[in-house]
Length: 70
Image (tube, rainbow, N blue to C red; front, side, top):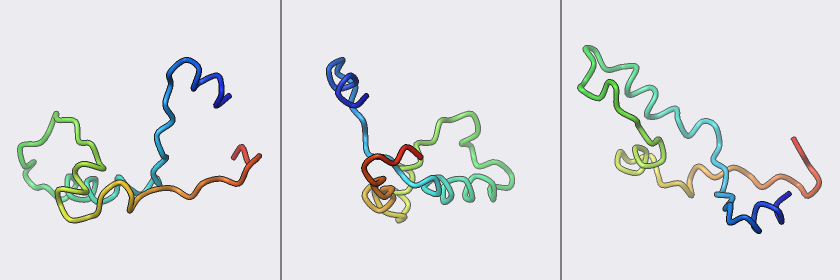
């Protein structure tokens, strides 16, 4: 499958751990009243980097073992 994707130009970006969204989610949930960011898209990796939670490399998921499809 990876070969077929590469042949069409599809690039598999490194996967991030699911919890990379937690810092921005907690910040938005704690905003009372909403802080003016309602209705805006928040890119969690960018938000994390701007707010001291590390860049994407801090949130990289572990590589699955070869043959592991889970």
